Image (tube, rainbow, N blue to C red; front, side):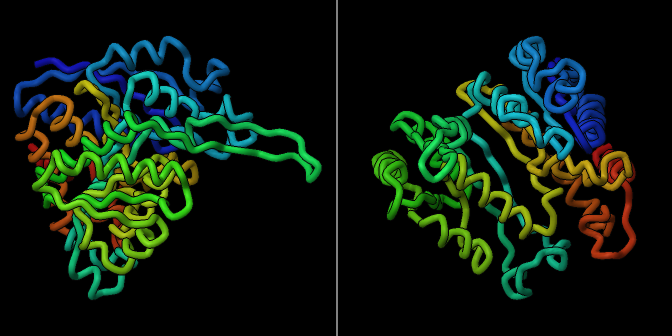
Length: 356
């Protein structure tokens, strides 16, 4: 099989980690008889510098034509002073919206080998955790009406949280079905004691529960969830929540694993095409220094193989290679705890050798 992948390397460490991902796919191709064709697409700050816009029409067109999209990272302090519509992050939001990628899957797992790198108390880290946060991606406050207006107290700014039943149902179904294939536990996180949008969210999710009788559904308020992630993360299997809450909680969960450089993600729509990216940012302070951790991007490749291309054996092989490299003691700087570390390229080579 031949698969066409649009590669948005983006900004900061994006080019380094997407190079690692492409090497991984090429190795998978050699081992399993597949062909991966890469189309380098300009977006984010790089596109702003070159063309004056975060997402050129041609870039969006090529993302739509691809079988899947691989994203490195976009943004950085260089472009922070730009108005909202010109920020590099607008490219990311636009790709998600235009490709209909409404479901963001963010696995968070504490590898036993990395317990010491986790900020969790030792007894909590010993229990481990393995969860997936399902974040709604194209609705909520990030896409609702926003703006500024004058008032007697000075300028006011507003952002509006809006969700429809249809939007909530489709993300909830993704989460229910994911839970069916895992531990059959789904926790829906909201702020239903205060927000009307959250009350609709809770009602809608519960309205679907009877269709999934094998899944145990629970609710949790977002402030409590933030505490529970630190105090007892092992209780969670699958979490489903809104765009804003999912953004915040998944970053918290990533820190508990030892490093945000370990967490992959998949953004999916109605069809199998998706966008795959590490959840960390562009980290411009370490760009070009070989300090980036490529594992999150490599694991994003594994998610691509499994979810978009149906290549389960190949995905398992990539994940297994990462596991064995970590078991061997190899560490990038972010998880080395001050001990010996390897560069981004060296970590990539180690995983490639295990995969081969």
